[in-house]
Structure formats: structure tokens, C-alpha cells
Amino acid sequence: MNYDFEGLFIEACDCFELCPCWVDDQPDEGHCTGLVAWDLTRGEIDGVGVAGTRVVAVTSHGSGRRDRGATTVLHVDADEAAQQRVLEAAFAPDEEGLAAREDPLAALSTVNGIVLETIFDQPITIEQKNGSWTVRVGNDECATVHAEGTPITFEEESHPLTLNHSALHHELQIKNESVAQRSESISLAVPALRGGGYIEARARSGMCGEFHYRHPRNSASG
Image (cartoon, rainbow, N blue to C red; front, top):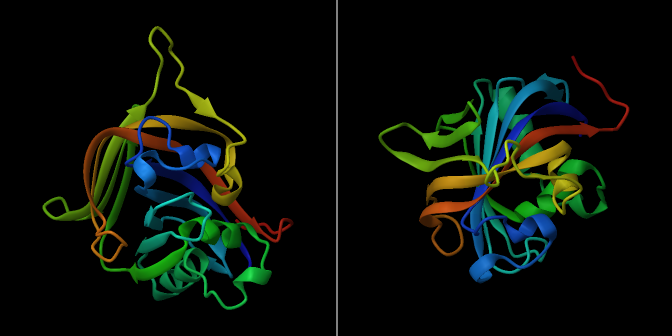
């Protein structure tokens, strides 16, 4: 698979303050359920343009995220069938032959774990305004995923907390530093996930930044 695409990512979960996954530690309370949302602003996958599409992975795991115990439900918001096809192949790759791959999306699959299903018929909204953000899957009246938050800023400091060279920088292909967030609220209703996938929580962990997935490294897209 050849790809070169980039955009904005937002991560939110039910851990407290900074999710231990970012420093390769065990999750708070022995488990972690949350989401990563990707807003693709430019690029292509196997020659198919994917600018303007959105992807949300809702994941649950017990021990460390790399311990092969994670399960994920993938949401893809794309208008064209070709876009849906390449995005599913990118974010939920076939396990056959995956072990031999060394590209960035193969690394992402190690933290997403087993993708139980891919859902194409629910709209995804990813919004940022004045530092605040909202991620929603589904419509306003019946969203299966809803999270919103703001950057973490220390008292008397004007700049938010940032993180660089974290344990997830490679898997998420983060450009430069990511900005720590406080998920003011997170609501998930994804019954296919291990353990039920139902969460209602406030003041939890989050992260936001820019990403750029590219393979091979010398590829380029307009």
C-alpha cells in the first residue's frame, strides 16, 4: 500500500489527566477506553484522494496498549466508495501479511488491535474553535460518540502543555509536538467493544496535534 496523507488528530479517553499510553505505561484503573479521530486535509491512498474525509477509531484495552489485547470499532466518513475502500484498508488492514510490514500504518494496527467492524453510515464531525474541540459520530440527537475538550494550561501560564517524542508519536505519525487536552466530557456507546464500550465521563485525558502518514518515505501527493 502506498499512501501520503495528513491532517489533524484528536485523542480522548477515560484515563485521568495524561493517558499513560503516551508514556508506554499501564492505563489508569487497569483499563482504557477512548477514541482517536483523524481529520484528513490532504493526500491520497493508493492513488485515491482522501482530502475531506474523516476517521474515528474507538478502542478499548485492559493492560498496556501494545499488549495485543485491544479491540476497535472503526468509523469512516467518506462520500465515495473508493475512498471508503482505501480508508478501511489503511486503518483496518487485513492481518494476513501484516507481521511482515514495517510501514507506519502497520505500526498503528499494533495499538488498535483487532478491528471488530467498520461503520460507514454515520456522519463524523470534527470541529476546532478558539482552542476548544468537538468530536461527534452520528447526528446531534443520537450520537454514538461525543467528546469535547480544551488544552491543558498551567495556572498563570499562557501556553498549553505539550508533548514530544512520546510513546505514540510513531504510531500516530505526529508532526512536531502534540498538545495535551482536558476532555471536558466524553460519551461512548459502542456495544461491539469488549466490555460494552459505554462511557460517560468528565475531566479526562486528551491530546491533539497534526499527523502525516507517508509510505514509502519518498512518496509525494498533491
